[in-house]
View (cartoon, rainbow, N blue to C red):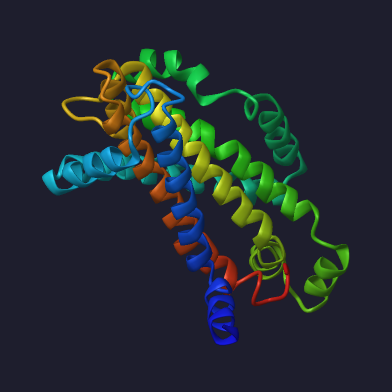
Length: 267
């Protein structure tokens, strides 16, 4: 008994095992609620039917193609937003005027939902991928700038004084002091930008549909809802959640473990 308990504790120490247990618990609770018939079966289908639909669509390739399409546009939006954020934050560090301008733009535009500027994007870019990318860039760049500039402003003065004393100036000071000291804020900005990108993409596709001849996961959700394919709709939602988990656990956590945790900046 004691050996089994020790084995379980060792497994529980691994985050992947805890995530598996939590996921299994959610599936079990969902299936129990389905069995109790507390909700209409059409709106609350069996988890096994949802998973079967997910498997069928994955094997047929339709879910994979929609996922690839979605990730392609999101990565384009993230890449463009990162480039703009780097340019603006670099300029802001060397100019108080630019810093004031960036702070004003953040205060004005960050609270504005990406979906709110979709009509403008459609008028300018038309019904296509460019409009979706524009909305995503708007959704990503402001929280990213807010976190990065906030991190730069919170760098202790003693760090910058030491950097200047050893001869660091301008770009060398930025890369040698400000960025390493602001890594937790930069990571937080990337995480927020990633989640905002998904929200903007899904919302945009659900409003005006597929861009061109193909669509992504947002359009897939909209079409399945229209045809009351609830099994398929929930299957698509699961795919989005799984992508979020993989990025969080596989990418962001790996970067965090290799930087801020390794450096003792967070517990």
